[in-house]
Image (cartoon, rainbow, N blue to C red):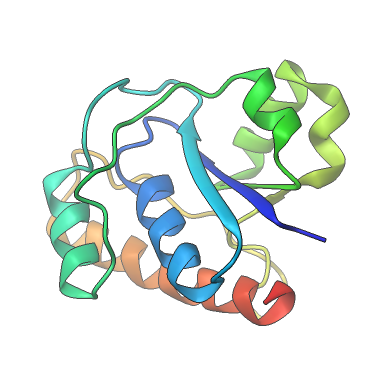
Length: 146
């Protein structure tokens, strides 16, 4: 059902590439990709996010940020965003994909859902917190659609 999963954040250098790597590990056989609403095109994963990902065994070294496009949205079976604001931005770009666009943190907080904050240019503590949230969120998604 959900074979092609697209993970979206703003710059495609902190949250979405790490969440993509986590989901790739937890959902073998699925096609995972990521993109940014305002991508820092061509950049690799932010050093703080990369260090946390690699320490946890997730491969992110070859990532290059790319811009979100309507074609990427159309090709996905499921689009996972970090916030309701990003969901609205996708609805503005491609209203027809809103039904398959959900928050990565949908199953956090006992199913109440939670946004995943942007750690870009913030402290190591913020990166640690965001990494833990994404770890929990991707585990929850894997249990739902695995």
